[in-house]
Image (cartoon, rainbow, N blue to C red; front, side):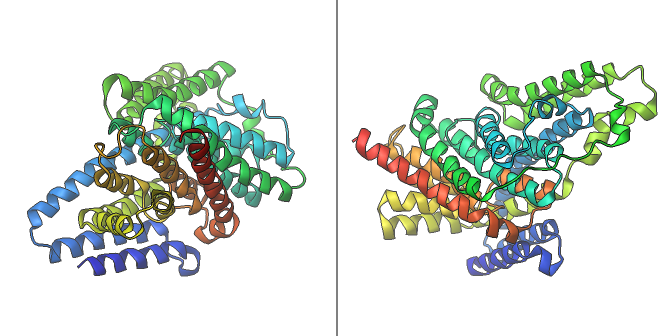
Length: 427
């Protein structure tokens, strides 16, 4: 049974990777892969009742991610429809490729630590659409945003789902994770940035402002209100989570609800036609549903590998055959580029107990770094990558050729930096 499920997963993965040659939308493949994996599991498994319960439990967790994604995308679309990003783009004057790349990546790095890598990717892709007209240039910048967002998320307890899991589980503490992982995370971003800086030349071309955009239906006040309230709603998510202990998607929905009411009030005097393009209803129609369904398909397929015990047995066999944490943890990071980092970290948390490896042990911080940044190596290895892939229709193979090697060099540079710092300063 496990062999069949793994085979379905691998075939699905290959079809997703070669989406363009096969001419089959990746969302369709992901959904089919996910459903087939569970179908095989329930037909060949022993107890259909338990398997159904496992699926229900996974869907509970996954729906939180999907609702978060939908909420964040709607907030970003709403800011965009009000031209709220002009607040930032009007301040970024440079068109020099090198300067712009460094500016965008540094913003992404720190924004990711405050918001999280997924939300940051959605915000920055929308921002880059306003700054870069040429598709090839824009995709290169977005590829670097994925690396920057994942690196920025790794050193913050709220920047990545896995670091949040380790924080909630008691494996790490916020001051320690910031202190120990900040430098490796910076190196993980700076190394690919320096390499790419040597290759980039010239200036980017800004998109032309269309005539109808110059007569903007929103006032400066409305633009600023929606921008600051929208970004404020996203920044408030971790605060809401800390205060209420409710999952992040509840915070996003709370922010979206407030933004919805505020936009209804500030546009109440306008006629229906004018109001329509500025409404939350319009933003909801514009969000990228195929990439949300792609997420669902990939995650339920991975959930089947988790439920059948494939992932935990893989983690156990790695531990038994290798035993060296300096090899095992980076391998888990590399594996998280192929399979989602959440179940991998969950399996590791179950395998290495807190009695043997107490809070803030070497393994937990290293795991947070590797699982957080390893996903950048493939476009579908992280939430930030999947969101960017859906929004900009990035090809898996294009990312593999242009960005993967940069992410890989950055990943190992940061990993060696972490091991070196620990060896010389904390032993």
